[in-house]
Length: 197
Image (cartoon, rainbow, N blue to C red; front, side, top):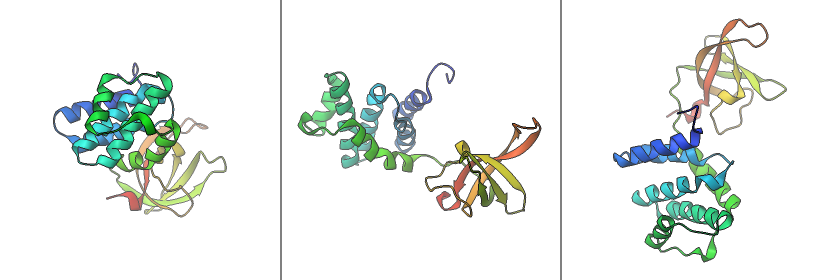
């Protein structure tokens, strides 16, 4: 599926499957991940609607309203048409189309909530960021044992800015050094220690 469908689409479908079997907390986590990207918002209005409905089921009416309004704003802006399913959700929540937010503003406002729902990876090592390379794309972590591991910034999963001295938890994975071609152990799934529950 990954080769044929974008990741947000897969996460959205998985969220719907979890919701169908009553695993609503997990469903919200996966739907929130599908909601995060800034690109192609118009094609993800159903993610926001489904997330709004899930939150309404959890009794989170204020958050539900914001998500349903975002879905409606996208449809109004891009299609000038609100589908029946979205109209029904608006009626259930007693919402009007008169005061819709701007799409980008609503999407930006909900980012912290979506990020807070992301499941954190389980980690097996701890250490401290020793340095961030000048290009900002990678760095080095010194483990508690004294071993140093390269990490690519794409492997950093925290909300706090990664900087020298930050205590982190991480996993290790064998990857080839881009310059030498030799295998070495890199840090992956890097998160600030304070984010580990």
